[in-house]
Image 1 (spheres, rainbow, N blue to C red):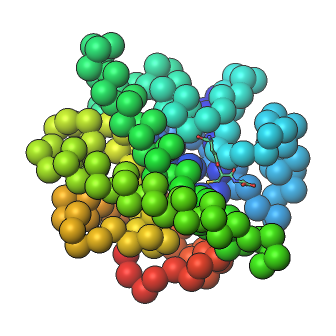
Image 2 (cartoon, helix red, strand yellow; image 1 turned 90 degrees about the vertical axis):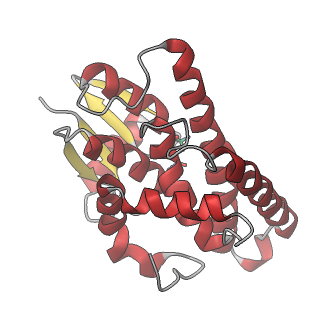
Length: 219
Ligand SMILES: N[C@@H](CCC(=O)N[C@@H](CS)C(=O)NCC(=O)O)C(=O)O
């Protein structure tokens, strides 16, 4: 049986895994997490009571966390695009960059987005301000990293770029990458031009009207 992915096309962490699947043309069953599929929602909540997605299920086993799902896919369904270097020492850089994008781009981006969904009385302007400062610092550091390499962890597209694509895609919507960081802007454009990323972005397009801060008229 092929792996099943519990996911939603507009979710950044789901896009991270979808990009990995599309890179290698991995066959999988898409289990849509939305209110029309109550059976899928119920199964997902039973598998992962912390209620975060994506979740992958195969042979009765559930795999949680986007990074771990991609590492699982590399072991269980390796394809033409190895998203982690075979050499464990080289893989450290890829894993470090993956952590960078999740912790210092995706997390502050989500903070800004989730704050906008809250009732106005429960908003956290201090926390949002901290998140924006984190994005500024992260953009600044990343500008140096991608000034000399095509992809985040070197010359090959990797797990780190799967994390980078949706995080920078949405982060630029909530906190635009300034012109003072041309290498990050160019890297984001390279990511969006990659067919696996373009496909994931296109699949999320119908849901843009639900973006709490208003999706910009671009990308
Ligand atoms: N650490 C998790 C994060 C997953 C995550 O935050 N997913 C979001 C969708 S992009 C989610 O489940 N949101 C549901 C919610 O916040 O209620 C991972 O790497 O997979």
